[in-house]
Image 1 (cartoon, helix red, strand yellow):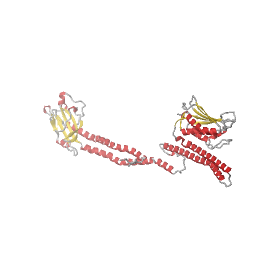
Image 2: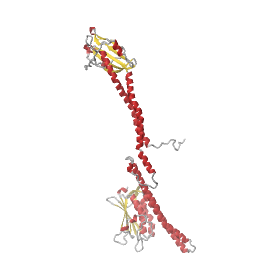
Image 3: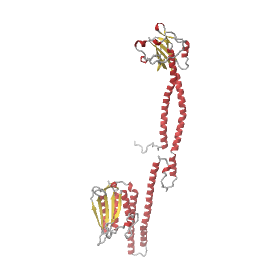
Image 4: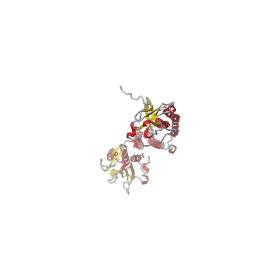
Amino acid sequence: MKSPKWPLFKREQRSLFGEILDWMLTPLLLLWPVSLALTWLVAQGLANKPFDRALIYNAQALAQLVKLGPEQRAQFNLPQPASELLRADESDLVYFQVVGPKGELLGGDRDLPRPDDDDKTGNYEVRLRDDEMRGLEVRVASTWVMLDTLSPEPSTQALQVPAASNASMPKGAGAARMVLVQVAETREKRSVLAAEIIKGVMLPQFAILPLAVLLVWLALVRGIKPLSQLEERIRERKPDDLSPLDEKAVPMEVAPLVSSVNELLNRLKDSIAIQKRFLADAAHQLKTPLAGLRMQADLAQRNDAGEEELKHSLKQIGRASVQATHTVNQLLSLARAEGGGANLSRQPCDMVALISEVLQDALPRASDKGLDLGYEGVDAGTPDVRVHGNPLLLKEMVRNLVDNAIHYTPSTPERPGVITVRTLVDPYSHVLVIQVEDNGPGISPAERDRVFEPFYRALGTNVDGSGLGLPIVLEIAQQHGASVSIDAAHPGQMPPGACFTVRFSRTGKD
């Protein structure tokens, strides 16, 4: 089974607004659960502190009730009011345990887990740990009391909590004369307090988070408003308004885009100007031969026209059609050189080979006119004669130079016309130079710049022409990084002749 030509689902066009909004809100929404977890941990720590202090106090208070009895044996007597006060917690269960030096239970709950042997502390020093009692999680405060520090007589003073000793537990026999006192309670109050802290911190965030999303959305709408204003300005423009956009009226980040649009507008303006000029030039240049064709056709259609007049009219019609065809070809060449030359494919071109092809095509016309057309210079394949460019345009450039020389160089039996095409390579700079030299009337220095203007023809020449050949040469040369100059071929002689020189720069060569 063949797959469908078009996919069923096409990717929607990306939204800059939506993409920026996603990148701004995604970190916010991802960090919110992390904030919850961190707040929970902090709340647990805050909830433990007050209850841990109370648990430590209770453990130290119970440790004060351990006394020395007869025969230096530890005794623990818990008054009934103290026992009821210890058990009076409404939320949590409280357990305690007092274990003698030999492991005997002196009071409290027998199944309360005992600390590790390595966790013994100094006298009255309290340590906290988490443990489990009857399947419930409990917080345990434990301390060790040395019998040697106890008074053998019952204390008649008020209950006081002595300062914890930093002395480490004695080793050997002293370690066996220590009483373990533990107080444990379940963690219900702690969980309730932690939950209250979480609620106090997180509930406002549930209101702040939607507000933050709304503010981000409004800020983003405000931030991309200049793009909408730029769009409105472009839409309000008239079709023929190609003036550049104001780069200062947009944000800095959009300025490169506006600059690129302005460059595109300038190129479009140049392209439209070239098209308008081409249409105007074509209309202007074709007006004369078309008018001549019509006039000669009217003359040929007269009733009293003789055979000679009819032949003359047909000859003029043929001449006018040839002139019109030549003008159209020149206009098309100029349009191609100006508008599309930069976009045509480029490749290494052997200029000597291209010149040979042009000379072969031009030899019949030169022979018919009695001109001596020849070539001088390096051979094809010589280093430094290759130019990176479009072969069609380069060939058109050389053809126009040769046609211009053939067109304007007179030839008589007494003084035959000579046209020489040269290809030279500078041995030091390796610059390629092409020259087309003739012994015609030449071009005066005052007109050497103007002959490159479209439709301009040098004064004093009684030769028909369109005035487009040399502008085509200049346009193609500039597109290939070359310059064109005109000099006298034979200075001081009459006629001086003309020498057209095309000099390629090293950047335009392959």
